[in-house]
Length: 123
Image (cartoon, rainbow, N blue to C red; front, top):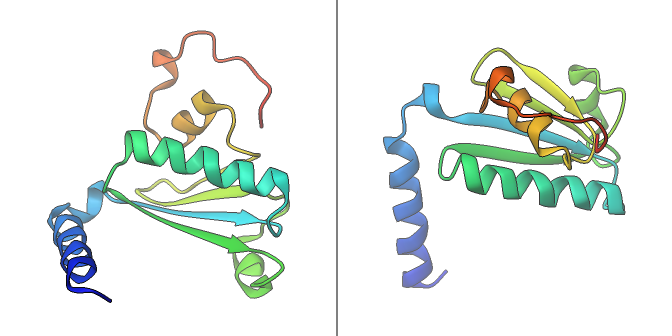
């Protein structure tokens, strides 16, 4: 690791340490390998997190084929599935995260009254 990379990592850590734990989002996205649907879910979720939770989230992507033990504890029945562990309440969102309004609502980043139309699909 170069000095520049080390300083960048240190600065990122220090920024994260300044954020109160209650404001941090702990997210786990369960996928089935890197299928097109799984890749789309990762990309969509990353875009949402970068826009709405910049510097305030921890995202772990779990391949259920590689780590089946983690799946049993979470009772995952479909993939991709996003589990919002913190802040409480815990939530689960199933699908490729393309329905941005539904993901924002599931992450408690908007209230249902804030949504205009909403729509289905995506999932």
